[in-house]
Length: 417
Image 1 (tube, rainbow, N blue to C red):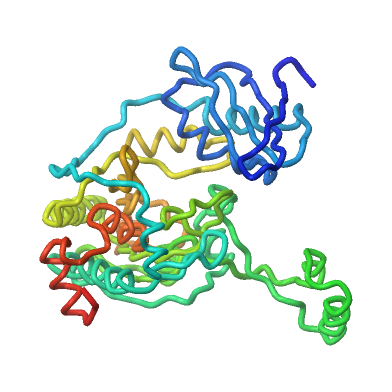
Image 2: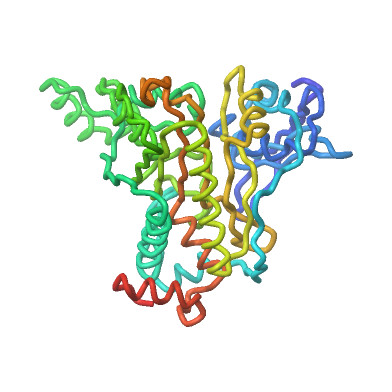
């Protein structure tokens, strides 16, 4: 074990032994980048169950990793420093820029998810999976409908319902494999051969199901979609769009992203529902459309009295040699804004994002805008479960205390408000 790592043990509240490994960074990292380190640590190794940052004098000096088994400390140190060096260290620190702050400051208390569970409104169905009932079902329908109505005030969107699966070819074309390998989930199946099927039946009867079954699977043609917009770009691949204004496509569907750990609430789910809007056209039209719709959403949040803000953000690019440069470019050019709502004292979650891709996907998918070359695009996405959860954290389960617009909207949809 090198002098940059040290280990001790502790006992958890459940009475099990826990191993803690302190890893020093080669050189300290600016404290402003602490969140960028945190969002990557649980992807360093599947054995890591938790972590703490070792900070001093406004810098991150190291990390304390918690594991259930005693892993090689030198190996952990190498992995941590490799991720920090490639993804974080070269990022430039900038002051977080806010583009909207709600005038409302609501008092929000902890324990909303527990209250929902006691009321039978939610049930944990598995890791990062939650079954929902009323009043969440009605609220999900209300907020989705409200977003569509706001969009329809200024645009004439084409709506589609996409398949659950997306081809790996579409994600490869979008550059997703190189950018976000940590979130990928492949869909496979047993190779269609009678010997494979009978071999599987025999081994399953003898030993049950384990990872050895993957040896009998060959298909990697499909993934679970991480978001809806890749479906749209794949749908429009190779087309030339008319230059008569911005083209708007919207879709709602299930999206899936693997996270190394899931909150025991609705804040971070393995599968969730996204309402997404894609704008395609000239650079000026796409940026203007994003700005117009974004301001409509801010006004909607204010009308409902919700507490939150919207700030410049960045995507969780992972493991690439140009990660730091891509994140810096996103923030500098304000390619991504994140709408965050309060869910607990001093804590917010992102419920929506407003993105500009420039000509990235126009080039990748061969989508042209008349004779002007690759189309420019942008997208807006809302995590509907997160949006509803934030609303309930701020207003509670009793519909009598909800804003009148929500009660009336839910009632008009046939919900139990």
